[in-house]
Image 1: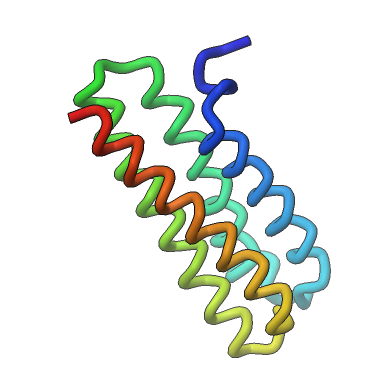
Image 2 (image 1 turned 90 degrees about the vertical axis):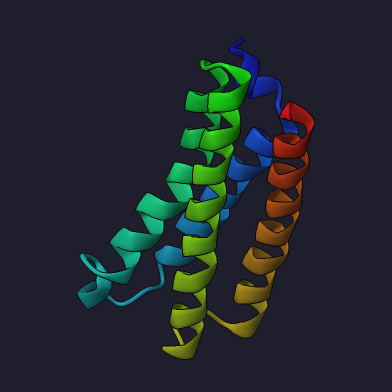
Amino acid sequence: MFNFERLAVWQKAVDLTDTVYAELKSFPGDERFGLTSQLRRAVGSVSAHIAEGCARSSADFATFLGYAAGSLYEVVTHCAIARRRCYLTDESHRKIYVRAEEIARMLSGLRKSLK
């Protein structure tokens, strides 16, 4: 097992990816290269940045956690747009949003612990 796989924040980021991917199945086909693609890249980047940062020094890890947070904020933004376009229900949006808030708090706490 790799070190990053033990991190609860990484596990929750992977879970968020599963949740978002499941919701993307209901998006219209004409969004395949637009919002759907953007969301897939952004949500996958959260856990990927955490994993990549684990292989670095503490200072670099903190930087990669910042990148992960940036990707998470992209997810929140794209989901807000999807909700406005009625691609996500209020309930689905809320489920993603609440999980994103938790991950954001965890990323922030982990970053602070590295300083």
